[in-house]
Length: 259
Image 1 (cartoon, rainbow, N blue to C red):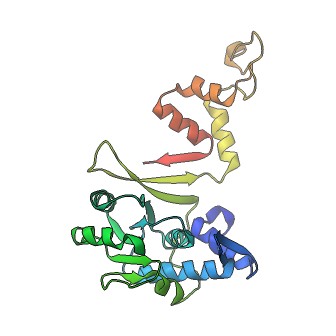
Image 2 (image 1 turned 120 degrees about the horizontal axis):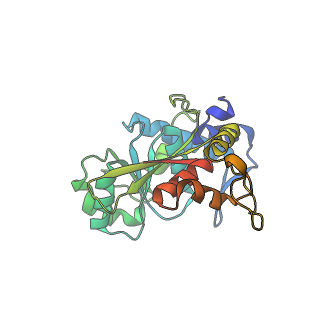
Image 3 (image 1 turned 30 degrees about the vertical axis):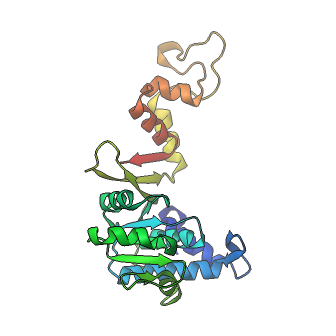
C-alpha cells in the first residue's frame, strides 16, 4: 500500500476497506445498509468494468440521479478509476441535459431508471458517450447497461493501474457560464506538507498571525515583524482583496485551485 503522502482518494478508500470488516457500516440510506467489504468490492468492480468498456483516465462521468447509495459507490469508482465526476441536477430536462453532457464531453453517464425517458431524448445527439449505465432496476434499454451487473460481476480487488500522485487529487468538472465553448476541470490539490505551508507563509511577509495590538504597527524597526495580524488581515496586506488575491489566500491556507 502507498504511503500516506502518495495516496489519492481511491487509494484512501481501498486502505480503509482493507481495515474494516463486515460489521462496519459504510452507507446508510433509509432502510438500506451497505457495509465496508461490499462497498469496497462493488466500487472496485465498477471501476474495473468501466475501464474494460473503454472509459479512460480523465474521462468525464455524468451523474443524473438522486441521492442514493449507488451515487456514492459510483463516485468511489470514479476516484479509483481516475474518472472525473460531473454532477447533473435531477430536475434537468432534455435541452439542459444535452448541454451538460455535451459541454463536459461525458464518456459515461449514470442515470436513474425514472429518468430514462429524458435520457432517450438526448442520447442520439451525444455520440461521445461510450456507456449509459441505468440504476434502479427494471427493464434496461438495449442501449444501456445495468448498474448492478457492473457492480456485482468481476474482480473485486483494487485496480493497480492507478499512477501514484504526490498529493491528494479530487477532480471536478465545472461548467463555465461565461463561455459555453470552454470546458474547465477544477483540480483541487490538498497540500500534504505542513512544513511547506509554514515556510511559504513565513516568507511572504514578516508579520505574525494574531491580534493587532492597540496602537501598534504591522511592522517594527527596519521592517521587522511588530504587531500581530489576523490571518485575513495578513493576506489582505500581502495580496489585496481581489479574486486573484482570494485564490492566493486559499493557496497559503493549504489548498490550491488550478483551472
